[in-house]
Image 1 (cartoon, protein in one colour):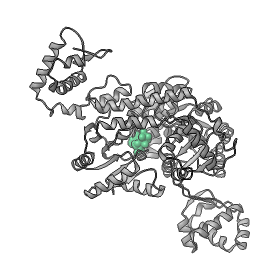
Image 2: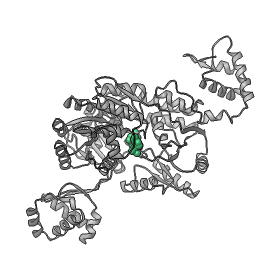
Image 3: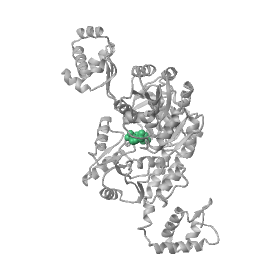
Image 4: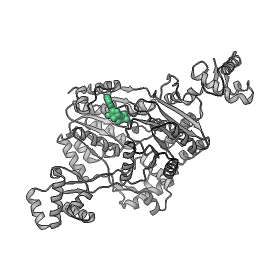
Length: 631
Ligand code: ADP
């Protein structure tokens, strides 16, 4: 089938966006392809459509389980066979999915990266007819990126198992050195990047210096109608702020990763459907959320990097209508961020201690545990082993970056059942077990496909129809599972901890010190870049574009800096007067900023600095490598 036919038949969209068309063609030509598209740019179709145009299976590596599950549900709704394998599924269930994949049952199979190195993948992959390898969030493969995940490095090994299969890598944020790194680490046969400008023409960025952030926020939300997201630093703060907004009659709720999965998805749905206007959240909110009419994204604290800011702010205005990205900033924020980033690299001793506690928590013997996953509750873990929560969290993150473990956010999986016994065996079992008889009959009535395949069921519904308590229902199901009458995989919504390497003693725990230091240096330079974004009065959009390697971007005309010129502290005449004076000062030689300013009285310095920023922005004034200014 042709790509446009696939697009129309399965998605009902009339045409591709220009970048999609080129990317899809490149993939269908069998070329390794890196697609850099902004969030909401339509990355998923870039591998889903080729998957459907060709024979065989597309394997998709994606780190975000919730997103992966959404995608699979979406594809199935469109009549496309897809499945996902991630930590937290039972071994037997994973086995079934892989067997199905070998038998050609799916067009797309999603895998979380830490599944890649498991034997089962290594053994089965060559038996699958893999037509395409898609790597979502591809920046995770780069140590220099802001979200390095060591298991991504295994993708190159996977390529060796299916040497003829092309690869498509996708990401929304990558600096030029990360773009290069992605292609190297994924063993691209030839460099091949499709990149769309990072400019967001309808998104107005601003940075507001505010000590009283709450009142300012209220002000903004009263002025800008429509849906919004407010990013706060801590879980506690999300709750407080939401209450504050409610008190001022703004429809708001809060969201963070510590809430039970069911509650999180209920809140998310209410916001998606417009029943709640403002979601106050930690950065856990928004991953993969596809809501087009977000009018305002406000940050009450500095994110850790321009990448994170660009992604979060970029959730505004996906429908192309005007939207606002506002950073409320107080100069003390820079120091709190510096402190936070520095303490996210704790001393090695702390890593040892946390690793040791993990060993006791999981009760794994030394040498065991590779690939095993465990329900993991951070708060409970910390209280059991008397550890401080935020330090422990950062230590776990570092153990993850060093490839010892992987951590996954809580994901709600429904209970799944497959009534797999033959009719005779089942009949025999029913006769012997009255309770099981009742349950299996209800099961078949309520879920007619349950004897064909794993089916998501509601234990609540089953218990109600069977006239039982949920706990007795669970017991009956577990007993039937043990008797191999059915396969029963109970619901879970716990975060997962996966051991990527066999457990070692804490003395044998090692980290690569050089790499650790390099990573820290990178994190610090990203952090300084976002601080400079907040503190430099130059076109906001241009600053972000430059960070992502677009050197010749034009001033956006709609950020606080660009619009500030018109309604700024001085008139056009004044502006010109300053410009003329500057030209005189710089007539004979280039000078550093401090010297230029010293030609003006000190109470004018701020205004003069603004004029200089504008002139630099417009390209009228230039700065050489040593920081000297010249016309
Ligand atoms: P990304 O992964 O780049 O953030 P998605 O793949 O989730 O973006 O796509 C964002 C939205 O745009 C989705 O709702 C998707 O269905 C829609 N979309 C993608 N391509 C097209 C197209 N060619 N025409 C219309 N809608 C599209």
